[in-house]
Length: 367
Ligand SMILES: Cc1ncc(COP(=O)(O)O)c(C=O)c1O
Image (cartoon, rainbow, N blue to C red):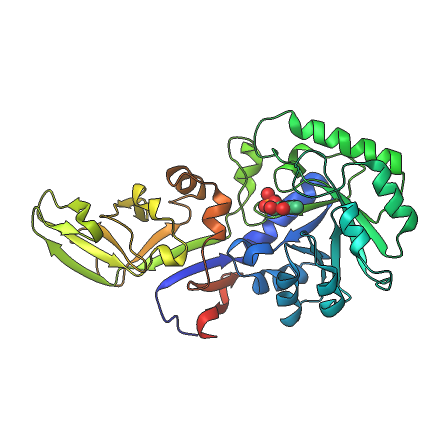
């Protein structure tokens, strides 16, 4: 496919392979690949296919819709759905590879007994206070009375990406519940990308890896580990127009930038409708290591930057990548790297590279 608009995310599948192997070797636990939210902006289908090719047995999504999307594109691995799924929707749309989360006693009681072959993991609320059972007696009751297949149990840490004793507190609560239950769960999992590094209890046999698989963990928390991860995503766009400004002339909406001398500007076909936070105007884009300051406000579809006489229409500019890191972008846009990744949407063409070759170029909108 010839990209129809030069706004391209290149995804290095070998980086994802590297990152999964790193988690496996450091933790010695099975990796569940988290591909919710369009695989954090990387494109769920291609990432899921790649994970299947690596032998990943369980993929994680947030909703039945996301699971059905993978199913419709031929994904056959098990798919664990994190959110509570409406029992009526399960009855209508269930596929044998789907696994649901039991999130509370109230939810359990709404399930009908005739879904006997349906698999579930129990979520334990150890302090995140989002979803999950708090009382061990309730979990016991589920295990004693359920007609369904209870295949796993898990908890979710709230503060694993910062220095905090709370991860330990949550881990202890989880272990105490596991000890009390003493039940032969097939899967026991707790950590996400950060929690799996800091919490490596042997009673846990799997880990749900999202952002780390895509190549990022908090560098201040896990410096040595973060250096071994490879960022899978590079987002670039192209200068499509160059023109000059006279001293004093404004640029863009509301004329928030005025040239302080005669200068050149370039226009890029990327804007906030691609998922680029408008606060990106605080951090220059890059050509190699060279700064390309953003002039005025980021528009819906376009952004103007300062260029010089060595720049030409057709030159590529880096938006996310080795010279403009997720960490820096998140810092400058008052957010977290998860948001930066997950907001990049389907307008952007994705190019998947493996062993130095482009294996697919996909734009969902014109597919
Ligand atoms: C329940 C659950 N597990 C795992 C993850 C993956 O987290 P991370 O991307 O930090 O690895 C998430 C992400 O939000 C989640 O909600």
